[in-house]
Length: 194
Ligand code: 5GP
Image (cartoon, rainbow, N blue to C red):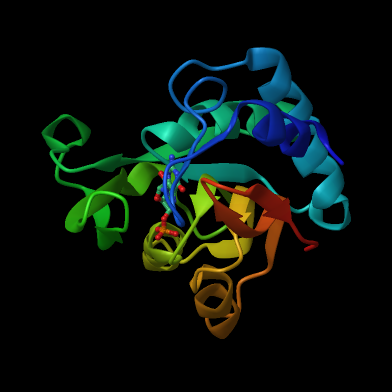
């Protein structure tokens, strides 16, 4: 069991059958030692592709902290897509619409054209995989820039939701640090394998 799985068992809170709260260590208060370890674990998980990956792409806000440590481990730059208003990025942007499963609405994500180029081989990183919409939106940005998406590294995959299937259909190489097979407030979290 890796450090993230151990921490989920210790401090994760199952809000209902499909939302896991991890805000005491991952996406509100941040345990930087844990995230550093996760950066190394992602490097190991994608070790077969580490020489080609030249950029990490994530989405604000909760992906940023994790992606920064992954970028540090791979020794490459990290870019994050902006959500909603993005006037400060300028008009020269690639955009995509993403439906948020947790917020129940669609929002636009954007990244400056400067930061996705034809030569780029990009690893997408995010905190959770639920329905796959965030990752598919990021894939669209990568394709608009003529770059290649090398894979998606997810901290916590909820395998009982449709994300994995959707990413598979889109031809995405998905790898996750923690795969949750099932969860409920009564029984807690049960892990499966990748
Ligand atoms: P998807 O786009 O795959 O449907 O959902 C992924 C996004 O929704 C992630 O970026 C994450 O911020 C949020 N999310 C999905 N499921 C959960 C969850 O169980 N807990 C938390 N905290 N965020 C989630």
